[in-house]
Image 1 (cartoon, rainbow, N blue to C red):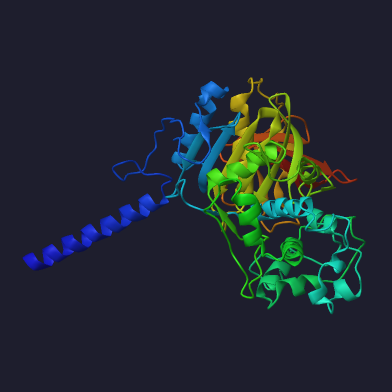
Image 2: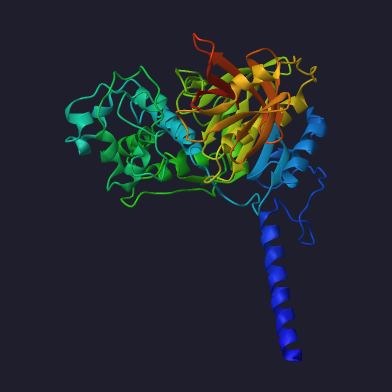
Length: 482
């Protein structure tokens, strides 16, 4: 009997340990005793031998109240899946925080931030006269693939069309999930030769007309560097970009045939991501050395076309002009799935770097962009009065109730009435309560994604037809389906 009681206690203790471990593994950060940390005290980032000067938030004109509010919401779990946040203001690292076991020495999967860095490398190759200018036709750069459609049919696609994702070829990255065999990116990754796969895509419209997000075009950019310089892009990037920036801890994933995954395979540390951003802020210079030409930075970060989400798209960089706290803000950024971001805000002499859970993190990009818009930028600006609202009757509110969906995602947006308020619910994101500013415009604030504005439109019969959701720094049009 004693022995049975002992075994029971042992099993019970083991069970409790497992529960505690599972609980701690879900916590954003543990304190020195190994328990979840909920309280936050700001500390100036540590000065180490990596070229970054450090400084205090307040010394660089940042109000710590909004930053403390952000950190408390992350530590409490109200803002999920964030792995790191770094801020560089006036050329100095002023904020550096890590979560879920990540630290400053951990490289992080960049996802499509890799595309923006590939664009920098193309610029370096053109600056060096290794690669031809952006008006060059792609069919002149892939002699190895002379039997593919792009080459033997001489598609009039230029290097610039690859950079701006306006190639005009058949590519569907939205209709089906990335894991679905009908998704074109899935098919490319499943092919024996991803370059050949892309060069076999059918032309469906004239190049340079319409933006269509196409990871295969960035794969071709990496191959252009290899074909013109004689170096794979991992070697080229190390020699001409990372080494001059003092970056030694990086690597690129590759396909089974050795092709470098320039569309999303780069791994970098957050402090090194910040170096990329600061170099772009300083017109291609780092510590007095011109890494890539000023002209390339300007061309890369201006809007050559419009992204599906409504902001400008340059040479694999996104850009927007927005207003926050009554101040006009110009910014551009590198963007990766799940919320990997390098934001460059010249207006504020600010670099903001985020890493986040990459996969299984719907709207993770909204979360990191929302943090920047709702917490970080306002901490550097004078406050503004609250937005004015009106009151609508319940029968009016009921007209907006229903399910809405975007063509870019299968994630539904549910609008429902709760008393005299509208609410929206997005899977994996907390419910947002909306207040009407007019009959067709509503506004709400979430701890996770900041301010969200919804503009409803009606058809000729007065029925609500769709809603434009202003989220992040773009907009998503959703059709009402029920």
